[in-house]
Length: 127
Image (cartoon, rainbow, N blue to C red; front, side):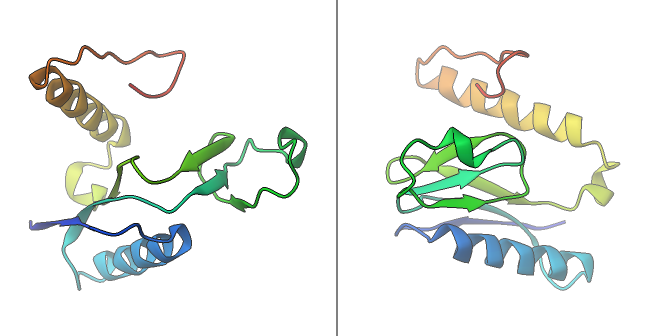
């Protein structure tokens, strides 16, 4: 089981990244590609999740890219590292909660190694 780890140097357009990830998932399903962990930044971009409503946006000149992820509005941009995963959970007993907890715990331990205290909060998604 090989996992490719990719770090993009220049910001990657959000929609281009999404297309690349969708293509990778299709190839994963067909066993034609390795799994992927992709670290990148986006140019300034706002995305709206499934809980987003147009009435949430006060400035109508702001472009919001509608997504299928949960949540409301998220800003992505320079200085904010994003880590995308294209991982075949069928090889890992399809346990998404366990997978998310492993990622969360890894981030908390990594931050700790830099002397940064962090924790997860069940009421607020994130670290």
